Amino acid sequence: MIRRRQSKTVRVDRLLIGGQAPVVIQSMNNTDTRNVEATLSQIRQLADAGCALTRVAIPDLEAAEALAKIRRESPLPIVADIHFDYRLALAAIESGADKIRINPGNIGGADRIRQVAESAREHGIPIRVGVNSGSISRAVLDRYQGVNARSMVASVIEAVTMLEAVQFTDLVISVKASDPLLTIESYRLLADKTDYPFHVGVTEAGTRYEGVIRSSVGIGTLLAEGIGDTIRVSLTADPVEEVRAARTILRSLNLMSGGPQVISCPTCGRTEVDLQSIAEEVENRLQAYDRPIKVAVMGCAVNGPGEARHADVGIAGGKGEFLIFSRGDILCKVPQSEAVEALMTEIDKIILQKDNRRSNDE
Ligand code: SF4
Picture 1 (cartoon, rainbow, N blue to C red):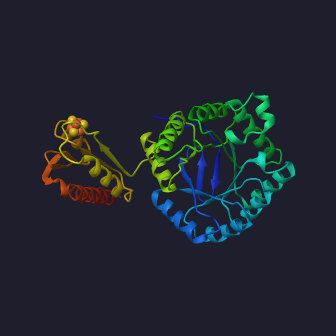
Picture 2: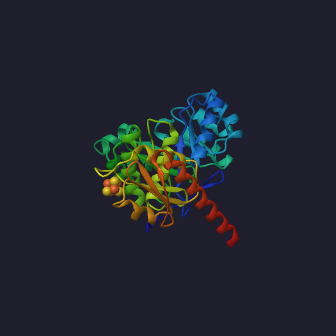
Picture 3: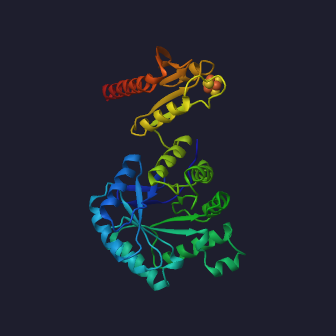
């Protein structure tokens, strides 16, 4: 069991971040925010994939104005991502942003930060103070001899102190680095110093392969220690992939229930079916499912039936064919070409049975 760090709770529209609220999955649109239709379409895809909160870039006033139209139709609350110009933060808040992300180090002096904080307070929205390893001020870098956990934490504490000085405490904070070890060390150090909720991620983590691994190491380690209230997996990929990865990280740590879990064997010299393509197809088709179900896709009869029996439903390969299992019983044998359909049919049956049982219990 993971013991979550005790943090304050912050409300973002209908979502709670921090305290004992479930860890919130977030992502960031990579569409041009000025393109309202494209941005809304991607937000809908993110919502369908299981994202709870998304962020959009606000590079200019046109984007800030477009946010008002996007927000009206968005199925998800939206964070406005602001750099360099406090007027964009003010405009995004007026457009209905549910939260804003700023780096106080590049937003201007104390007076500009105060104006942003006052506007956020009037609109009842929180601010994320996000410091990255690349955005630490020269003075802090000199004081702590470069980029390290101490300079990351000092930088974010400095920013938080500026906001607290104007009595703004509706905050979420982050100290992301592209190096997972630096990220882990920074959040651990920060966890000893504050009880604001944490947005956790490894920034600029990389492509779908590298990025998922680096993020899983960084985010997963912190979550296993109870650190992290909302997560973003940053990938150079379709943001829907970020959400898929985030869900898998949370499920791996039992921080998220529900949804399908696919167990598949690594294949070996005994495999006499094309297990890789079958496992991938099953996993892809199950992306559309949100009910909890454990599915085993196994290559042969050595370990296959054993694992398949412990799952709700499973298949175990033979010579160009598969045995289909459901709840520990062998149901039938099908040729490889029919295996996915046969498995999906059994999955649908089990889900229906579970739903019926639940509604009878209620
Ligand atoms: S289940 Fe069978 S095919 Fe798969 S790795 Fe184990 S022994 Fe090999």
